[in-house]
Amino acid sequence: MEQKPSKGLKVWVNAQREAIFGDESVDVKKVVIGNGARAGVMTGRTLVGFCEVEMKKLDGRNHWYPIEDLTGENGEKIVEEEIPIELEEDGGPEEEP
Image 1 (cartoon, one colour):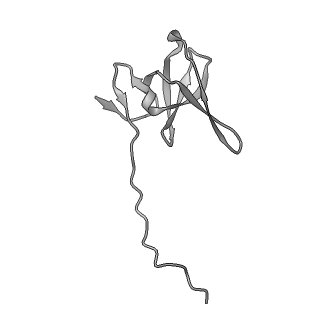
Image 2 (cartoon, one colour):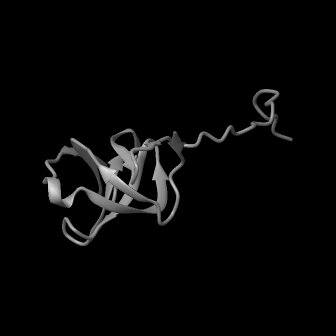
Image 3 (cartoon, rainbow, N blue to C red):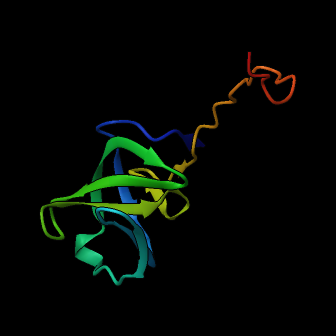
């Protein structure tokens, strides 16, 4: 069974890496999470394959983990929802008057 990321969804984190967002950049770092601290709750925020998870048992802070490394409470696979964006057709460069 599959579930889409949503606010309040309880998940198990099996991540080997985490995204760290800075003021002007993003860094992906290797992480090691102890067995007792793997439970978290999704905040509902996702970005390019990563999802924000509140990790109360780890350190009480929010962390960004790859969606593919998360599973639901009962082992459900978490999958990112893809929303197609329709672009208007562009006729080429605009002419200046």
